Image (cartoon, rainbow, N blue to C red; front, side):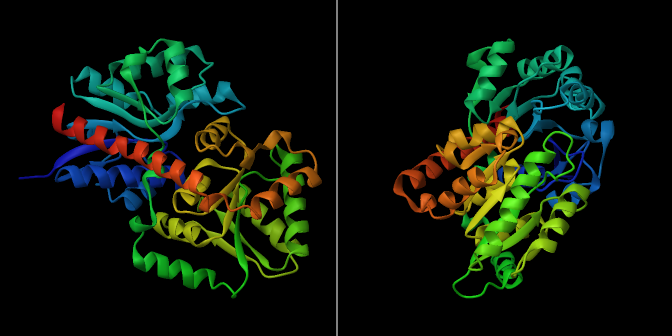
Length: 374
């Protein structure tokens, strides 16, 4: 008898560590709950490999799947800039198709762990609200997402508020071999601190170029003056010209040791982040993953969803909007204060992390309820 097939959908149209990790976690949960296979109808091929999904695409995948889960990610909310093009790409990337197909064929689907809003494009907003209203379960990762959806017309009682799926991770979820490989790769010198530097915005970015240049200059100044800190330059995409450009520019300026790590395997990347003393990132999930695994994280946020996360973990002071960074000295004051803090080992913040882990695991319970009861 063939295995049952379940469809997962997320932000899976360009390869990206965070979206890969979200789908991998959700796929693992599905397979733990019931003997079955996972299919990613509209994901690029690298996701099939990372998630261990069967290679079936498009309508054929939707036909084969008995149930559908919209997994974690920010694909139901627009970025800070270029909202018109984002609204167009929402339809181009067929985010609405799985929900509409399952509604048409009277098969159940759920939305579990996604972020939502804001949605200024009225056509995109209308479709997202339709998707949420027709879902058997709608669970969003933060209070702001629920607020947006309620404002747009989704009944409050229909919406669960959980937390990002990645907040469910702990060191115990990492394979010993990946940890060993990460440790060997980093090969730290005794007494040195490893600081992850993940800048996904270059000095040529049309929206944040000047701000990015200030951060790069600040980072060079800090590490050149502090040889006991080793920068680990991280790219969370395999083929990002912008991230590679940043790494190249920074590496030319450093006068002391530095390490370059480019993402190629989600669990190795998790292990790398777990071995660092701290991480500076412009994106969401490098920070969430580091935080979940006990590494303190500092963000220069290029997207409003990142600000939501640091508010959720009560670390607003460790998240600066990228567009507001206009001075090296101001940035370095914040960054150096962060590096000398013990925030990840303070009882209050350990309790917050544990509570968010519990909330993230509600997504697993909702996944179980959806698979078993609908």
